[in-house]
Length: 347
Ligand SMILES: [Zn+2]
Image 1 (cartoon, rainbow, N blue to C red):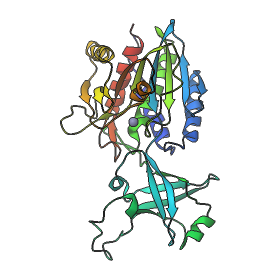
Image 2 (image 1 turned 180 degrees about the vertical axis):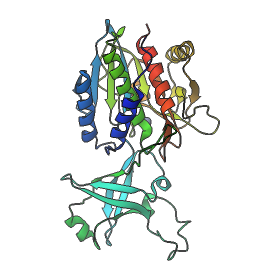
Image 3 (image 1 turned 60 degrees about the vertical axis):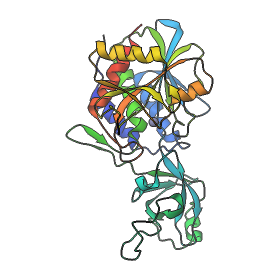
Image 4 (image 1 turned 45 degrees about the vertical axis):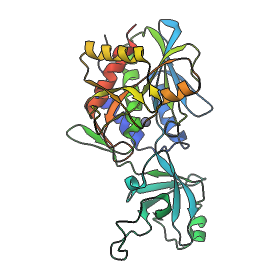
């Protein structure tokens, strides 16, 4: 049985993904890279109207299909208004707290595709002037982008081509450490997309014929709640979302395991499907933890909500400080890939 992915290839794909800005709603560029990598692997795919990519690996059973998904869209922001003194006010895309992006470098993409840079700060950014610098609430109301351009007014900003509705992405600051950690923003869920590529490459190179036709849906609207809930082929019986495992409080997931989710904000995942994944992890000595995620939803729960009659499950690499300064370890990618490989080859 095929058990191993090429971890170097997987980390390389992850770094590529992390360095392409892709806030929900602005994912065309990253999808072009996804399409190119699928072509390199010789895997057929199609685009959906929503801009997702559905790749298919034919298997022995063509009547009952499996579908795996991971999402490339990330948190981000959009220009809400331009202040009279030439700063940008933002509205958030996806669920994060403003303190987690304070001081972060960002990019603004104009309608014509021109990129400008800036820094996200509070409206009272210096201790030398504002006695309440530390206590001012970190909220959309009190945060602005300081543009790296010589602008003094809204007119100056508009002259650059920047307008309300422009997408803003956060600097990922992706780093791979000697000790095997990957720290960056947006490891959620680009780590899982990279793992799916590691898995697809391993299957293709080993010329493994899977027992069931298997689809890989690269979704692009998860952070705003409706990725992966359409274009599911009618033959799909099992739907496995691969998305980050949450870490903290009394949860057991860490940065080295594959996390198996039993329940999130949407309710319990399919019991039999989850138990099958746990059994596979045990049989193949894969390091795993089972957890509930208290504030979480996935593409699988979105698909169930959209009315698809499927069995759904959720697994993924443990990610520390999710939706903030995230970090995971190569071991988590490896364990997630091992569980996916053993699942895809199982009856
Ligand atoms: Zn996610």
